[in-house]
Length: 253
Image 1 (cartoon, rainbow, N blue to C red):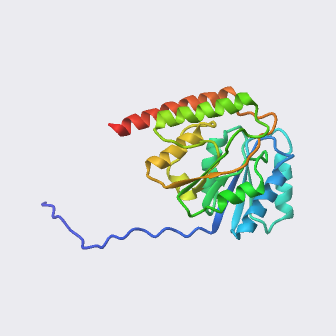
Image 2 (cartoon, rainbow, N blue to C red):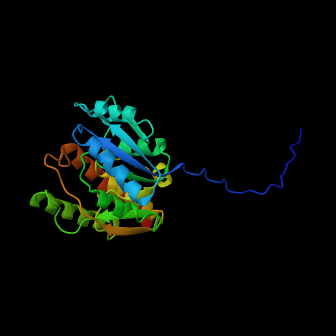
Image 3 (cartoon, rainbow, N blue to C red):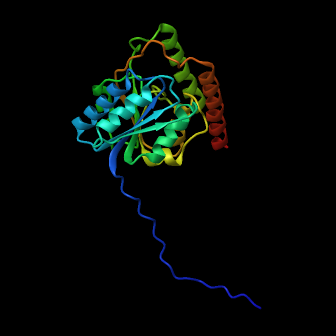
């Protein structure tokens, strides 16, 4: 039996994107942050309130050993009208994986990580959020040495930034400053890294996709007892540096 080709005269139109329910989703990763989590919630609320933004707060507890989950859930139950949701992991997944998971459950047009150890002021959060819409990505950076950070960590941070710029061919001021993204970009372009190296890798992926950006100077601080310098993060950074270099080399061919 002969087959007959059938053609259809159809006008193909792009699918309309679903409207976002909220303006911004705050992703708050926590590991043993029972002393800080409520202050972080308060700062997110205040910053969004100053700018008149509809927001939600997504608390991701990464298998804490203290009472972080109880403190967060008690707040959520006592403030049912607030857009606060709490997610708990039965094992430690790392901030990168939780960052992506948060984007999938979020409902905001914009998406930003707010550290659970409360290292940003309300003014800093407002500075970043206030530039929403100026570009696809709002990249915060700090000028000079961060209060509370040792000279060793300051020098290591500068070295890391310089190395990433050399490997990637970019000239950004900082790669770990917690940018404001469009949530849809986080859904489309997540990375495989599990430690702190994911931030540079993800940001550079978006720049390769020709996303626009602006850099905004902000003030931050470090808390004592930071876990940034550990073996897991060193492996993550090394892995991400390799992938950044490989992607640049591949794209250049």
